[in-house]
Amino acid sequence: GVLTLLKAYSLLKNKINLKIVGTGDCDFLAKKFSEDNDLDKVEFLGEIRNEKTKFTIIKNSLFSIIPSECYETFCLTAIESMGCGVPIISTKIGSLQYLVQDGKNGLSFEVGNHKELTLKMESLINNKTIALKFGKNGRKQFLDNYTDDSNYRLYQTLIDK
Image (cartoon, rainbow, N blue to C red; front, side, top):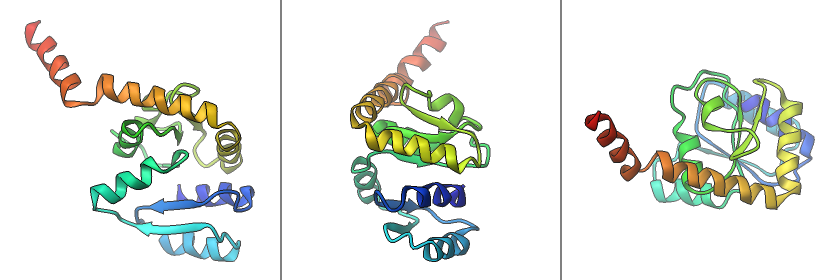
């Protein structure tokens, strides 16, 4: 989905910085698209293994974008963003359609629809109050469902049955 992301971002006309984390088969095409369209504020960071660096990037983001076009069984990037209190914009595919609750902890868009993604990005750029609300809701979802304690409580409930 990185090319969908870059097409959407190009419509923003470099309004914000975009950091792309990770690598994949489309790296060359993505970098070429970025250069060909004068996307000056796009930074390709590659794979980040250092946890502190990764979480610093997430925490300092207005939102995380997960433009996946593949079915995710459990999207760790979404969980990490929720844990940091950062809202998510993601495709409606695989587990993402359940993790990202449109209008509650983030926004969703149809796979490959770069124009819809642009609108979702603009809505959070222009309304930081909503972005903060989504981030807080995501953080609550993380604390309620994805911590050691919450998993222990669930496990204990299953054992008690």
